[in-house]
Length: 264
Image (cartoon, rainbow, N blue to C red; front, side, top):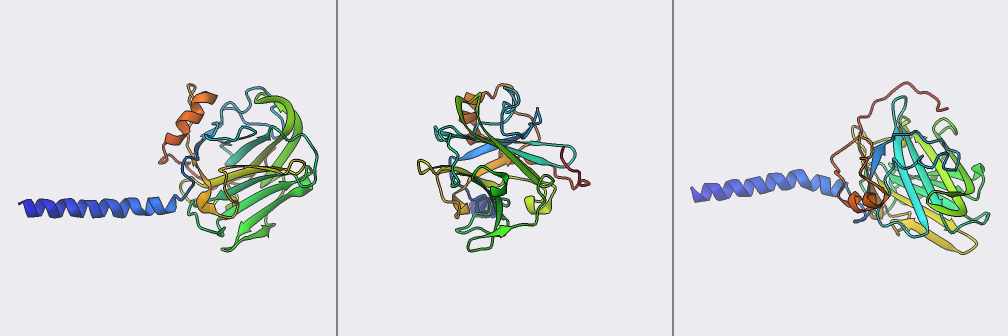
């Protein structure tokens, strides 16, 4: 009897490991940099400013943000599924051609030591919309990606202004992308990508990033988990940072392929 029980326990451990191991391998990310992407209460107006003082209050504040840098995200639905991003660089108030904002996304959270085909990078270089460039991984590095339509698949705006987060004028960027477009969504039934945000100020040669890692190593990016719920009322700016590290990873979007509609 003891032998049978021992065999049963051993078999159970093997089965459990077989279930958990793929999850561990797929969700490769930089530990301590996890956040939750909530369904928006208020749809933002992407004009590069806080249109209202509470426009981004329904988006979570990620943990471990640098003192000089801030980003948030939230999503909207129905119509197509739109992802909305806010990025602020508190100490940059100069207009330099080499300044940039950057977003890296590993759609399948499969990591890797180099960007893969499911990885995209969005660069806004300088302070003109013509400086927005998209890249896709090719297994060894990045190649420019042009198969998208501006103001239909993706849109961004920025301003040099103050915000509820910092009263000193600084660069703010707001961006949305349509996740119903195939090249912005290869996630299947759920969505928990690895992500990285960065900003660079040429005048001071200052680079800030979340996580503080390379744009070229998806293994070292953070993790964002999408949920089909609004941010809890009790989740204030302070508690958001404290609780994000224990966000429930099993939550996910319910994705639907809807007729394409252009965002207003």
